[in-house]
Each structure stands twice: as structure tokens, then as C-alpha cells.
Length: 630
Ligand code: WT7
Image (tube, rainbow, N blue to C red; front, side, top):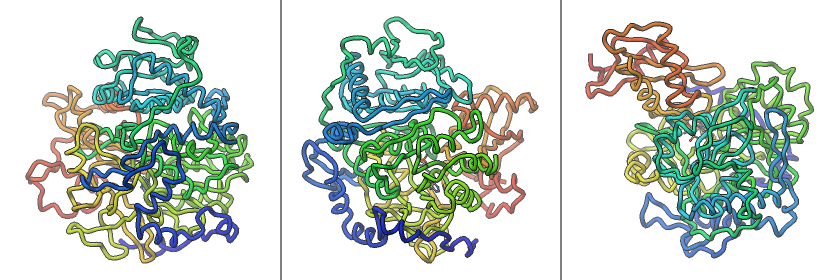
């Protein structure tokens, strides 16, 4: 359905913003960049440091396995830390960190570099060498970015597993990546409670033989089990002479792997998305600089956990490459009161705030009085990511947090894209709910099933039609799945999995996932993961997961369960199944509701028709059911 009123430009940047913006004429820049994307990206790469420059900007000879800056030698740490040591950036703050319990820690670029060197030396002493995988399972403390950078520095490949994931999820990711070392903490704080990370890690390690050593950061200082010869406290390692404050950065090929990050796909278990040193650093730094207009005087607060791609690209690598000052907060935004973020913004002078629509909706619920207690006049730009932002939340964010003056930069992108793909810049007119236009150098289209562009306002599949430097280099150890999932629907075009429409002005409106990936509170989950978690419970014979609209989460998970014969559905069993999913995947995946059913609507080929379940649950027409089994 077309809704014309939603298409209006509702915010035009003030003249002053346009005059002082990093990008003054977005359309003009896009035109120039898109006339020759490799030339544009080459120009951007020229802003960074390289040990050796590239022979070729883009090598498409093995498409869709594109290579960027081939022949170049670099390391993301060369740009994030090393080059800053020779300039005034050395004395600037890299991170301002606040613990949930009020702890405060700041690190200058000089101090951060020292910490990273020391951590890198510790890793080396444990036998970690270039190409080895290291799993990081940590609370949101500064040792998390430090550990990531330490891995990158010595050429090891980090795989960060979000600290909210369960034993099963952690175990699967450690095994799949075949990691040699695990970096974790005794525990972490969230909502005033301790998350027993080491205990979870111990259980995961019972079945993961690949891990040789475990480095344990002390955060809560509670007693945890330490296995002699395997587990070491980080502070004790730091006291050893090996942990000295200098360590050479390993020269990497531009195409050498930097990290793996697991994300949910259409089928099966989460897949490891691979990113590399060269193209990734060009993509994250350019997009952050242009879209958020970051300047040396800014203080950037990206609320994402470093365990997700947003944290990788825009808490760790992007801001550091730009020499920016980032604020990191360990805990929940509502702890102890729902003004925690607003107090942080005031206290540390945050100028640019980047968060999720679900967080905005969640905080909006507590009313304006909480933000109004704080001086938020330092904010100049706001941003969102993860899912479409509904107009009510947009308005509240813009008016109450942004004084009706700050633009809301709605950035559309994915774990696989590495950096922003569709986003406005502060000098560009906004339509609330639209991520506006593709970034310079990026070409996006909305296609019908046959591969033709749909008419303005019509819904279709969102694709990216040309390669870009920060694109994933594929799924670790599974090249076929990469080709099959992203590059086989339309020849030569990257399938995003999202449906979208483009309006008459060329603005993109993301509708949502078209495949069996779901978004809950901005988190990405696969229906297949949730279903297999349910089926692993002894009472369950079959399961189907869908989402239903939810006021704060955007979407909430609902599951339909067929029980094994002889088992009766009950409120107790419902609660048990919800817990079970939480245990198998993590709290974020816990269903909101469980419905016990006798059968599931399936196609004749046996595929569950989730669309029909969803329509039924909402009392809506079921649509075309001609392929339904019965
Ligand atoms: C999916 C990717 C952390 C980076 C983003 C999350 C949805 C992302 C937007 C947005 C509408 C969005 C899409 C996409 N999405 N940003 N601004 N507007 N939808 O990365 O976990 O890999 O999820 O998030 O559906 O495909 P991710």
C-alpha cells in the first residue's frame, strides 16, 4: 500500500549545517563517485596509510569474490593507532569509558596503543601467530576493543561473540572458527547483576578441544574456576616481562582476513562473515566521516556493543582511524534510572549519538522528563541503525533529544556490507523513516522477481549492483553458501535479503527482511536457529517461529510448537521452552509467546508457510494459499 504522506521531506538542513558540512552537495558527490566507483574509492584510500600501495584498485576476475587494493600492504592498526602516534592525535582521548557501577576510565591514543601492544605481546607469548583465530567473549569493557586491536596488530583473526550469547552459541562459534585462544572475563555487569561469563565459557570449553589457552580479564573480581595450564588472569600476564609496551605491527596483505563475525542466515546455523584489512578500513572510515561529519572536536557515542558489526565498524575501527573520541558505556540505558544515556551525553559532552530505533522507543516510554533533566545542547547529530525507524520514534528522538535541530542519520547496512550503504549526510533533506539515498560509490536498486526495476513506490528486492571495498569476502569455509545466498538470485548483483521501495524522489524505504531472517530489537536472528533450538527440547517434535509487531522491540518472536505424542501443553511447559531457547541461543532469542498446535501450514514440498501463520495470528487474510498442502 502506498502512503503518500510518509514521503514528504520533513526536515531540511539549516543553511549553517550545509555551509559547514563535510559533504555539502551529496547528490553531486554521488554522481561523481558513481561515474567511476573504483576511482572514488582509490581517492579515499589515498587518505589512509599503507606500507605499500596497491597495484589494482578492484580485481573482479573471480567475481563474486571481489578483491580490493590488490598488491597493497597494510594493517588496520597502522591507521587506527600507529600513524596517530606521530601527530597531535597521540594526546587525544580515544575512549572515555563508564562502567555500569560508575567506574570511569579514559585512554589517550598513546595509552591505547601501549595497552594494545602489551596485549599483543601476551598473545604472541601464547603462540598466537598470523592467521590464527582468537575468540573474544567479553563484557563491554575497554579490554574488548584492546583485544580486537591486539589480534589485528599481529595478524590474528578475531571472532567476537556477543557477551549475551549462551553456552551453546559460544561453543558453536569457537568450534566453527577453530580458535586457539579464548579471551573472556570473570564476569560482566548488566542491570546491576553479574553475568558469569567465565562460567559460561567453561561449559562451552568442555567440548571445544581447539582452545589451548584462556585469558581472563578481571572485571567483577569474583572467584571463578581457573584451570591450571590453560587459564590465566590478564593482570597477572601483564606483570610479566613479555608484556612490554611496544610491539611491531605485522604487515598484512590488503586482502588478508581481519575478523570473522557470526550472523544469522536464512538456513541452518549462524555463518561467519569474513572481513579483510584493506577495503574494510577504507569503507568504515569514509562512511563515518561523511555520514556523521565527525570532526576532532566531536565526542562520538555509538551505543552498540563491540560484539556486533556496528561495534566493530563504528565503536572500534572507524572512529579510531578518524582519530575521534568515543564514549563507551558498559551497561543498560535504564540502570539505575532511564536517564543514564542522557546523563552520559551531558557529562562527557557527547556531540554525535548513534543508537537503535528499539532503544529510542524503549526510552521514549519513560517520558520527556528524564532527558529534560539534562543539558543535551551539545548534541549536533543523531543516528539510528538496525531496523526502520517509525515516525513517532523519529519525531521524539529529533524533538526531545535533538531539540528539533539535530538531523537523524538513518543508516541502512548489514554485517555483510561492513559499512553504511544507504544513508543521508547532515546536509541532506530527510524524510523520517527513510534511510534516504545510497552512499557515494554505492549503487542500489529495487527489483522484481524477474530482475526488472520496480516502479517508484512499488515493493521489491533490494540489491547492490556494484562491488564496494568493505564488502564481506564471503562466509568463512563456505564459499558455495556465499554465492548461493547472495549472488545467485540476480546475476552479478548482491541480494540483501531486504524488501524495499524507492519513492519518486529516489529515497529508499526499507520494509524489512524478505527471507527467514528476523529482526527483534534490532538484533538479527534466523527462524531456523530458533526452531532448531525448540526441536532440541525432548518435548518438541516440530516448531515454527514468526514475528509479530511489538511496540518497543519492533518485532517479537512467537513460536508454534507441535509436541511429541503423549506430551501435554501447559503454562509450565511454555515457560520451560522459552527458557530453553534462551539457553540454546541467548536471552535475545527468547520467544514472547508459545502456542501449542496440532499441525503447521506447509507447502506441498514441506516448507512451513510462516506467512500464513503470521496472518492467522494477526487475524489478517491469509493471502495466496494455493501451494498449501491441505
Ligand atoms: C539487517 C542487517 C548493525 C548494522 C545493521 C545491522 C536491517 C539495518 C537498517 C535501517 C531499516 C535496517 C535490515 C538489514 N537494517 N539497518 N537503517 N533501516 N532496516 O546489521 O545485524 O547484519 O542486520 O538489519 O533488515 O538487512 P545486521
